[in-house]
Length: 161
Image (tube, rainbow, N blue to C red; front, side, top):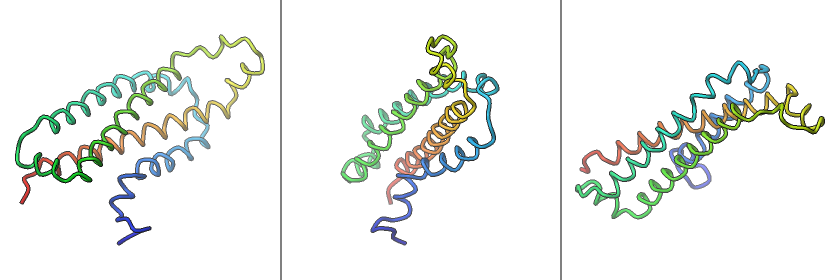
């Protein structure tokens, strides 16, 4: 089945994580999450993100340095190879963004801000809801893309028939 001239698999790969992240983030905004409740979980995300960063770059290194028939076949398919590299690059960048954002949420001292307008803005419920909803959005998007990347990786290393 084609949608705007592309297969469903293309749209799932390209926007599946974004859509799923949005589906989880919108209700999160409305359930009124508290940053103090989420802080312990958010503190651990950078470690996971950086492990995934190394993991994904290792997978990329395996593909780039591999000399098996399957890898040679994949490299000969320029569009497939470029999509694989591009998807890997996107997931690695998302990993770094999520890790930096998590550090920001947990370790930035919002009370330190001197301006009372900015200070009241940083501690408003709506702002906390937005910050945590954005965190959930990025986390789900990242998790979806990592799982999808691993699926693609294993499909690529299967023996070509």
